[in-house]
Image (cartoon, rainbow, N blue to C red):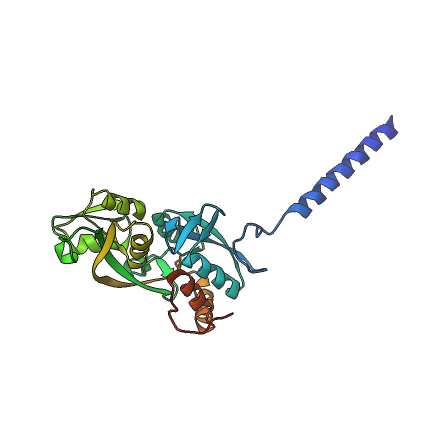
Length: 272
């Protein structure tokens, strides 16, 4: 009987050791879900907008986030030697995620402003932008921002265009939406008189999705620059700036820019 108990105890000991060994072998580095071409390095979580064409949007066929910002942050990660895990959300979530340090990096066509710089850090500017108005194609009454008094003007909540409208056009009725596409749809349906938003997004929608029903009017307003965001005091800022400058110098930035905007910003030769 004593030999029987010893044998059972030995079997149990073997099973416990085997289980421990199996657990150690299957534990990974956490990089398997990364979204970068880098072969190594630490993985950082990148917060991005879930629908800001052509900067970031979900390709429903592949389930992958695509756009200018997505290609750029992946190229920066490759150059800097780290990996990225991209999470998409509403734009407001990107800003608050940086302020709370919930995410390591934020890239979402985010304008660098003095107010935002109080609570988050930015990279060097990577895109020059501004604001512009869109109206229905048959609208001859609104020709510029000077004609907005008494009009319903739609935009996206939590953006610089909302701030601009409230600061500069108190006589206009500002209507905000969580997503900018909803604003365009209300404009097409005649429920608002105009939309004000970032130039590249407005022009992309007017040229590709509005089916000839909308047009842009007036000048580009409030010259802006987009920056990559970080929690305050992040040590990543320097590495990202260095990688961004390298991509500009070697032509990779221009390759990405040309793919999404049809021209080369800096005129550098292709990196290929």
